[in-house]
Amino acid sequence: MKASETKILIVDDEPTVIAMFSVWLRKQELTCYSADSVVEAMAILKEHHVDLVITDIFMPGATGVDLLKWCKQTEREIPFIFITGTLDAEFVTQALNLGAKHLLPKPVTRNELVELVQEQIALIETDEKKREDDNQIKSELSDVRKKYIDEVAEKEVLFMAVIDSLAQAVSARDSYTHNHNRSVADYAVKVGMAMGLEEDVLTKLHIAGRLHDIGKIGVPEAILQKNGPLTDEEYDMMKQHPAVGSDILRTLPNFEDILDIVLYHHERYDGYGYPRGLVGEDIPLLARITAVCDAWDAMTSDRVYRKKLPVKEARKRIIEGAGTQLDAKVVKVFLTVIE
Ligand SMILES: [Fe+2]
Image (tube, rainbow, N blue to C red; front, side):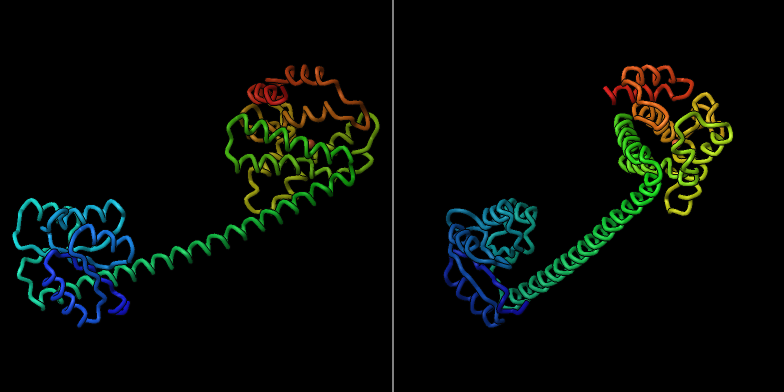
C-alpha cells in the first residue's frame, strides 16, 4: 500500500489541532479526512474507506470512545489512536477494552504522532498482506478440492460403467439374470437403508447386487437355460458360481466386502448353504441381506423351468425360511420394505 493510499481520519473539536495534525501527516504523503464531531466522523466513515482514526476523547456531544463503540457495532475494524488532555481512568479503561491501539496525552509532538502513525500503517500493511496470503491459500485450496471432486466423480462414473458392462456380460447369456441383478441390488439397498447402514455400505450392496451372479459366466448356457430340474452334476457346476464370481472380481481395489457378498450369497443361516457352509452371523451381514433379496426375487420372477410364485405365497415362504435358510432379523426388515 502506497502512503497516499493510506486514509486517516482526524476527529477533534479544536480546528487548530486538526490543521496541525493534517499538515504533519500530509507531509508524510498520507491522505487525511477531518471531522470536528463524532457525528461528522460517522458520516465520513459511512462514505469513505478509512485505515486509521485519530480522535480526541472529549468533545461536545458524543466522545471518541462512543465513535469506537459505533465502529465495532457496525463491523468497522479500524485501529484507533486517542488523543486526550485529561487521562480519565474510566474512559481510558473503556477505550483500551474496546481495542484502542494507543493513547497520546496532549500536547502531542510532531515526532510522537508521525512515529505512531507510521507504526500503525506498518501493522495495517502486515495484516493486509496476511489477509491476501490467506485468501490466496483459500482460493488455491478450493481449486485443488474442486479438481479432486471432479476427478473422483469422473472415476466413479467410469467405475459404474465397468460394473454395468460386467453385469451385462452375464445377462447376455441369461435374460433372467439382467432384471434379477437390478432387483436384488434395489431391494438390498432398501433393506440396508431400513437398517440404517452408512451410504458407502449401501453402495457396496448396490454393486454386489448387480454382480452377485457374475460367476454364472462360467456356467454352461445349457445349464443356465435348462427347462427342468438339474442333475447332481449340473447342480454342482451351478454351485461353483459364487467362488468363480469372487475370483473374477478379486483384482478390483477396495472390493473386499463386495467379494464377501458375491462369495457368500448362497450360504444358509442354518449352515447348509454353499460354498463354505458358514453358520448364522459368521455369514457377513451384507451377504445375509443379499441372500434374502435374492431368494425373494427368484421366487417372484418367471424362470425357464417354472412360473413366478404369487406374492402372497413368496411372502409365506420367506417367513418360513427365517431362521433356517435366511437370517430372521433381515427377513423382519425385508418384510417392512416390501410392505
Ligand atoms: Fe446366485
